[in-house]
View (cartoon, rainbow, N blue to C red):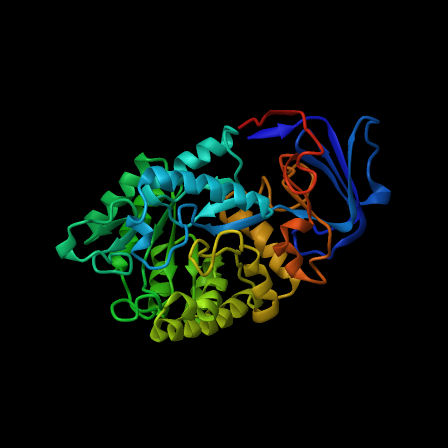
Amino acid sequence: MKLATGTTLITHGQLIDGTGLAAVPDAALVIENGRIRYAGPAAQAPAVPPDAQRLDARGGTILPGLVEAHFHATYFNIAALEDLDIKYPVEYVSLLASVNSRLLVECGYTAARSGGCLFNVDVWLKKAIEEDLIPGPRLATSGREICSAGGLMDWNPEFRKIGMEGLVFIINGQEEARRAVRSLVKDGIEWVKTYPTGDAASPDLNDHHTLCMTFEEMHAVVATAHNHKLKVTGHCRATEGIKNALRAGYDTLEHGTFMDDEALDLLLARDVPVVPALYFEKASILRGPEFGLPQVVIDGHQETLEGGAESARRILRAGGRLGMGGDYGFGWNPHGDYARELTFFVKDVGLTPLEVIKCATKTGAEIMGRGAEFGTLEAGKLADVLVVDGNPLADIAVLEDRAKFIAVMQGGVIKAGQLAKAFPTVVTKEKK
């Protein structure tokens, strides 16, 4: 991905650096050759060359680019679980993924971790983004997911003989678990996504208190993945599934919904981040009837919402880490609504805007394993920046309004926002 060359000075706004510290009023951000040179009070900013590009924040806010920590690039208008794997051919799925990636940047998200992707499309999506063929987030890939036979993601009945190869590896036992991970290794995956537990979407077979993988299968996945320097995550709602994942050595948890004291202690002991992804649950409740979701499914989402919110509060208050992201791409929770997750955590869960922004920037970058490169506005880091005409500390929902974005920058290059065409930027290839 290209970096800007030259100097850019951003002034006339408050600065939220993503570390959790209080905002700096009347701040300045100095960018040199795509990296941050200075972030702090304007009065202490270093001098910049006369030909420096100057960007006016208009009394708004300068903050790090957001990180979507649970991104499904190939989900699109999903109405039922079956739509995830057989609705479209891979050629169309690839095009949809590129559209969703561009939209993510336009929504202020400059980086993302894949939460599972049809046909391993995210591997090639990442390559296209990094080579500047298409706009998109800095991406961590996960490709096809892993689930035991008869588990949440194994919905195609035996009589259909269709299989699930595009979306998931269906495994039985430890050897098949290892084989699935090794297939992902060959395709260049960074994260292995698994399904230790069920979900409210499948109340009859694999509800949100059901286990869908054995501990032995999970441990085999982790041991094989870690041997190849891959990380492992999993869809973890049921309490025992959460504990199994933590004992097996998972690197993050998706959802972490029903967490008891023992699970919390295990989580904190290993400092494992959790991505609750809760707005999907609220959207399912609010719009489920419109899309024909059965009442038993909506009731399950209500239980998940309440349990997940309580677990998220407990995790953060106990000193744990939360990432922000969700299952966007369903008909009732479409791509483009990503920042509704942030608003939900402020208005419904009770986190402060500053806490949520830290989760959506610093922690997100840490989950991706790239916290030293971006996620906060600190000297030396890549200039992945969001400049907003508004104050998210007063109203976090301003981050939902793309029309308020003055600039979305990656490596100092303006990729989206009001100034995307007004400031042509000289660029150079980013050094790996």
